[in-house]
Image 1 (cartoon, helix red, strand yellow):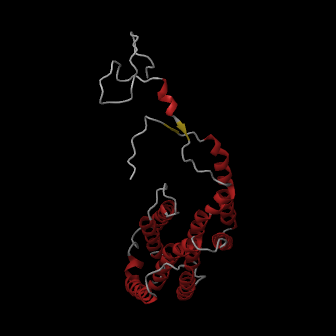
Image 2: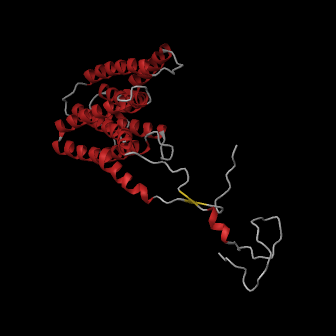
Image 3: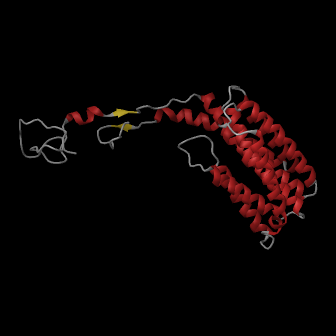
Length: 286
């Protein structure tokens, strides 16, 4: 940018307007141009322990994926009866629903409507279980497991963590997890296994996140931290029963996400340097 009009000296004062013809080049600016520059306008300062608490949303979702995979392995190896899995899922559903009703005071949908939706879903899921169980039967097991890994990674990546700047899609995340459950169901022997797998996926990936979000937004400030600790503990124990190495790896990842990444964020925060000035696009204020 030119700070002087080349080849001339003029007593005329430059004005930052477009509607007036001036004796200056189009790219001319005077010394006042940079006086309007501002740095880090409306910057948000983060505190370490607040960031640590917020990372619980990520570790809770990772725990959900780990628990779902471990329960599938149990059913695949014959260590868990699908009928027992359905009964346990029903009991957890009722317990979680009671906690949800007690916590969320803003609900406008009645319990009768919730029960009707649940019965419709269970009827369709049970009726379509034979189809789901054979839907991907012709695909090789290696391909099924590879698709499942990518779908579960998609579930974690696109999950709604409550951050407006993040790339998230609740429907995409849920669809990815349901598709993963359908893939895994085709590796199990009976339609009851398929029904148990799909209902487990919806319980873990559709209903549990709603309860977690409700607890996080409730007046009980410690509920979110307790839920995070509970989720990570259950996932670690479940993984250890299958593979101690997987449990150690999960613990290290959870520790890094919970404590190391927030520490890194706080250390980098003083380096933030966003500049604002007259070159910015105009923003319409209502």
